[in-house]
Length: 454
Image (cartoon, rainbow, N blue to C red; front, side, top):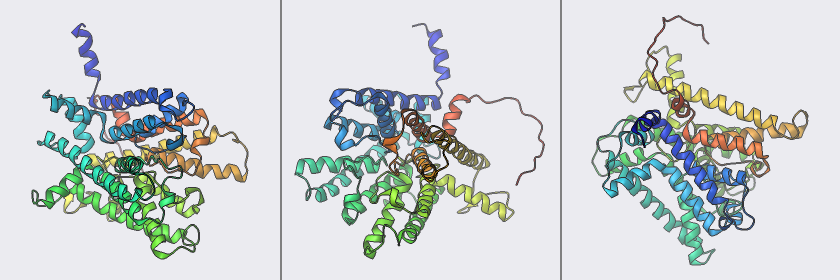
């Protein structure tokens, strides 16, 4: 092929565009596979349902319009496991490791994509960190599988117990939330063993690989202190888990936790607090929760996990920095400082852009789902109910969480497409998506002029 044709195409394939195209291509490939009769447990999936399921799996969301354990064959179920494993770590990451094993060089674009995905600053020990990511993933998922296998052996034959354990361990670590049980983990609501193993996997995957790496390095004495990024992630995660647990317990004391023993109620509360920010596993029926609790879960889903993790949302760092911006403005400070470090203004501007873009996207999709609802135009109690249902579904899809009030299988084809696009945007990130189209720097700067705000 003529190099004159290749070079212009290569120039247009910026790292952001390559990142997006890799996910889109893998989703289409996964969709085609799920459409095959061999992947179905009975009747083959329609293209829309296969696309929705593939996107949810690759984008580690967990929303599903089918019953994974019933409507997919063992081959189809195994395919979803591959989807959220590769989707959680990233297609480019797997490619880089494969090229490294084969002794091939790694392009600068591939390095730039992975650097921006997993690391807060450029690293010299790039390949060492990539190998560490896969090592941590393998060890954590293997440990989770072993612990769940011990418990599942009491309910299933050894072979099935191992399969179920591996599926749920990988799903949990990658913060997907796909389950082979029709009611997710409701049947294990009071099982402390299963709850704590799943929560440990969710939190480990949700804090991000660079935080995991730094914690291990500090434990081994290789570094003296954690980076600012890790400090913010760990403290924000702990605060959100504790606050979410306390508020869930308070809001549901007279509802789903009514007449329950205190240890069981606390276990249920902490599990919902953890899973709402990162993953779609649940041990209670979300549709039975009070409005106050639903509002709490909406906030937790919107915040999400940490950057460079397998989770979604606007990220705990963005939420933390936004709170710091507000606090410093109230105190009259121009600079935003935390842990004796000043945050660059470029990062603060990006934080505000991410939050505003997320709110706008959620508003647009909720409006679309309400507009396309069959009962649109009717002011009834039922139609009012669908507002909170669609809002919950939208935030869950954008945050790649996977929790639902039960509306997902009832979505119309056009609504499924809208939610599918939203899951993709939520996994990629609205700013990354926008940057992929407007990546060229503008060379012209205009004179400044003030505008009144606030």
